[in-house]
Amino acid sequence: MRRMKIRSYAYTKGPDEIKFKDGSRWRHPYRAKNSYQLDMYEKVSREAVEKAEVEMSDIDLIIVASAGMVQMIPCTAALLQERIAPNSGIPCMDVNTTCTSFITALDVASSFLVTELYQRILIVSGDLVSHFINPNQEESYRLFSDSGVAFIVETTKENKGILYSKQETWSEGAHTTEIRGGLTAYGPSLYSEDTKEDFLFDMDGKSVLMLTLDKLPKMLKETLQHNNIQLSDISKIVPHQASRALFIVERKLKLKKGQLINYFEELGNMVSGSVPYTLGLAMDQGEIKEGDLILLIGTAAGLTMNCMLIQL
Amino acid sequence: MRRMKIRSYAYTKGPDEIKFKDGSRWRHPYRAKNSYQLDMYEKVSREAVEKAEVEMSDIDLIIVASAGMVQMIPCTAALLQERIAPNSGIPCMDVNTTCTSFITALDVASSFLVTELYQRILIVSGDLVSHFINPNQEESYRLFSDSGVAFIVETTKENKGILYSKQETWSEGAHTTEIRGGLTAYGPSLYSEDTKEDFLFDMDGKSVLMLTLDKLPKMLKETLQHNNIQLSDISKIVPHQASRALFIVERKLKLKKGQLINYFEELGNMVSGSVPYTLGLAMDQGEIKEGDLILLIGTAAGLTMNCMLIQL
View 1 (tube, rainbow over the protein chains, first blue to last red):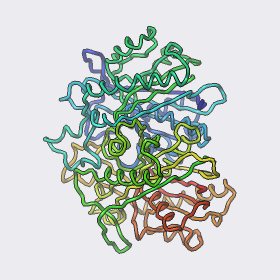
View 2 (cartoon, each protein chain N blue to C red):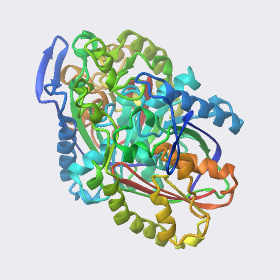
View 3 (tube, rainbow over the protein chains, first blue to last red):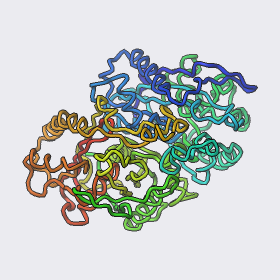
View 4 (cartoon, chains in turn brown, cyan):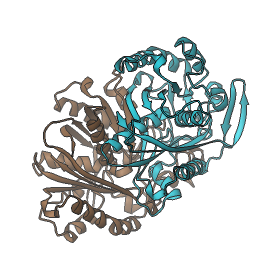
C-alpha cells in the first residue's frame, strides 16, 4: 500500500445552472479572454488549506491535474501559485491524462509520499469547459459542467492509502475525443469562421462507449482478481461522471443500491473535476466515510482508463 | 536513493540549421498545421526502444514531458502511443514544468519505479519551438532549437539512481516567460493580425536572469550541503542550455575545465529537450560515463528551478 491520507478538500462549480433533460449543467458565461479557471482554482485551494488547518507554506508541492491548461506556457500550477502562494518557492507541476488526471495525479502524489520527496501535496483539478464546448455538437454540449476541485493529501502512519492502481491507454480512441486546434499540430493562426469548430471539443460518444465497453470490464475484473476481492467488498465506487451511461453500468454490474455514486443529473460531466468532485461531495453527504474501501474508476480522452482502490 | 538505470536514449534536432552569431539553431520550417512534434517523438522513441533491445510492449508507461503540447485534448503521450504502440494499452501521461519537464519527469518516473507501479518507462521530451517563437522578438527568436529526445529508464539492483532532487517555483517570474494565447485564458477566437504576438513566445530575458541569479545559487548550495559534497565532487554538470549566460555560470562557479557541459553554441536552447539532449550527447561523446555522479540543473518558465543528483 502507498500510504496516503486525505487531509482536506474543497470544490466549486460554474456559477450558472443550465437545465437539460438529463439534469443540471454548471457553466461560466463564455468569454474568450478570462481568468475563471484560475479563479475557481484559487477559491478551492484556499478553502482546502483552511480546512486542513495548515498554512499555505506547509504545502510542499502543487500539482494541477486538468484536461485544459490556462496558457501554453508556463504550466498552470505556476499560475495558480502566483494567486495563492507567491514568494513561497513551492514547486509546481502539471499532470495530464484529461478526464482522469486526478487519479493519475494521485498515483504521482502517493509515489512522491512513499519516496519522501514531498510530504503534503495540493492537487487541483477541474476544467473551464464553457470555454471550449461546441454549441453545435448537441451530444457533447449538453454533457459538461465547469468546476474546480482541490484535495490536500499527506503522509500518514495510519493504514490508509492506495492499495492498487491500474491505468491503460488505448489510442485507437485518440481521436474520438479531442480538441485539435490551438497548439502545435494546428496553430491559432488557422482560426477562422470556417475552422472555428476545430478549436472546440469534438466527441464521438458512440465510439467512446464501444471502446469503453470492450476494455473497461476486463480492467475492472483484473483489478478485483489482483486484489482477491469481489465487487461487493467495495464500499463505494466513485466513477467519472461521464454520461447517463452510468445508469447502465449500475445495472450491468448488479451493484448494491447506492454502491455506485451517481451525481450525473446534478453535476453533469466535470471532465478532470468529475472524480474528485464526486468523491468530495459523497464524503460531505456521508455516503463515503473514513475506513471505507473505495474504487475510483473512469475513462478519459486518449482513450485512457483508470482504476484505483483506496483505503480511506 | 531512488534506484533507476538509464537503459537507452535517442535524440534528434530540427532538420534546418540556422546560423546566428552565437551558434547554430535547428528548426523545422514553420507550418501552422503540421505533425512534426510527433514525427520527432516517434523517431526517437523507436530508436530508443531498438537500442534498449526490448520490444515496444516491454515499455509499461509513456510520459511526454514537454513545454508545448500537440493538441489540447488528448494528452500528447496518447497521440505518441498511437504512432508507436497502438493496441498496446500502455498507459500514457503528460508531465509539464516547461523547460525542466524532463527533470520533473525523472522525479515522477523514479518514484514510480520505487513503488513498483511501473518497471520500465519511456520519457519523451523536446519541443517544436519553430511553431511558436516570435521573429519580431530577436532576443528569444535567436535562442531556440526544435528537438525530440527519448530516454528509457528502468528498475535496477545496481547502485544507480537519483540521490537527491529539489524543485522550486518562483511565480514572481510567471509572466517573464510565457505564451498567453491559445488555451482557456485567452482563446484562439481572439487571434488576429493585431493580437498574433500574444499567441507566440514572449520572454523578458533580463528578468529571468535576475530572478535566476537571486534564487538558483542558494538552491545549488543547499543541494551540496544536504548531500555533504563539494561542487568538485560532481563529475559533470548538465545544465539546461538556456543561453550564453552559461559561460558566465562556468566562470562564476569556478568549475573545472569541461565540468559544465556547454553545447549552447552547437544546439541552442531546446526548451524541454535541452537537458536530456545534452545528457545523451555528452554520454555519446564520452564526456559522461557510467559511474559518474552528475548534476542536472535548470530553470524553466514558472519560474521553476530544478536540481537533481544522479549516480549513473
